[in-house]
Structure formats: structure tokens, C-alpha cells
Length: 141
Image (cartoon, rainbow, N blue to C red; front, side, top):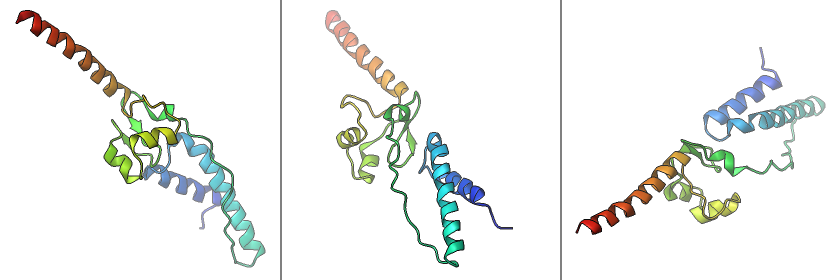
């Protein structure tokens, strides 16, 4: 039995999530868009005797909120959806970006760390402990 447009849309969206091409938060919107596109294709197919003309919708996607991509233990690349503890320069180069251009593309402040919050706080603590140890060494010597 052939799949309904809703089942096809569900399968397409789930495949995108599993391939890390889509964030689960965006699933509802993309599912609606995919379903409506499939219904339009089905209607065109019926009216044109099997010939389908594919038109891409010109509706712009909602602006990405970069704050949701940085959580306590993970940071999600807004280009591909892959999750890391830290976005490295090596990964960003795969998208033709560096840290500065990535931040400006998504409207991030230039001081925003591209790392999970837990990793950033550990580094901050370590940075604050090191000067204290050095001062203690100088007092002893």
C-alpha cells in the first residue's frame, strides 16, 4: 500500500534529524512545509497527467536563535546540526568559515565562546587558579 503524504513527510523529516541536518526543535515547522509541498506535488501530478513541475517555496526560514545551540554539555553547529563539546576551527573550515565569520553569520557577540557552558566554566576556574598558584610560589621563593 502506498504511503500517504503525511507518512512520507514524517519519514523525510526523521531522516534529516537522524543525519543531523535538522535540529529536533525545527521538526514541527519543517514537517508542515514538507507535508504541504508533497500535497502540492500530488495535486500537480493529478492535474498534469503524471507530469510534475517542482517549485521551491520562497518562504524564508525563521532566524536561528544561536542561544539554543549552546547548552551545558553540548554546542550544536548551526551549519550542519552536529553536536560537539566545542566547535573547532577544523570543523568550521569544512563549512568555509572561521570562528569570527561563524559568529557574525549567526549574530553572536565576538566574545561568545564556541564551547559548551560546562567546558567554558572549567576553563575559567582553571584560569583563575593558575595566577593564585603563581603568586603563592613567588611568596615562598
